Length: 94
Image 1 (cartoon, helix red, strand yellow):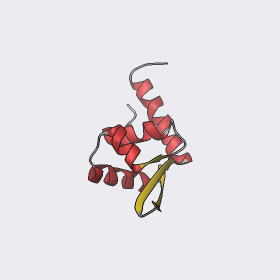
Image 2 (cartoon, helix red, strand yellow; image 1 turned 60 degrees about the horizontal axis):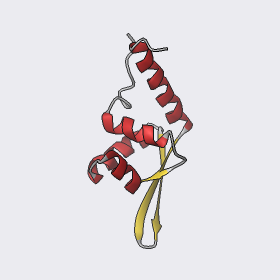
Image 3 (tube, helix red, strand yellow; image 1 turned 135 degrees about the vertical axis):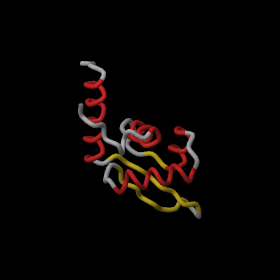
């Protein structure tokens, strides 16, 4: 049996990737609201996805407030699609 991508098998990272696959970009606040994660946990998981080059993060400011914007990379898109196909194969879904 093929092993599922452990980076995407985490519930929070999978949630983040699922959201980012359906939008051009999403900021930290949006991802935090949608995943209902704590800021600290989300920050750690985003960093892991970024280190794997699954997402890109752009940090900046809006006025004096920090803003982090995330986007799926081509590597991340391919990994996510592979993960979904692996799940389908595991469940014997065509």
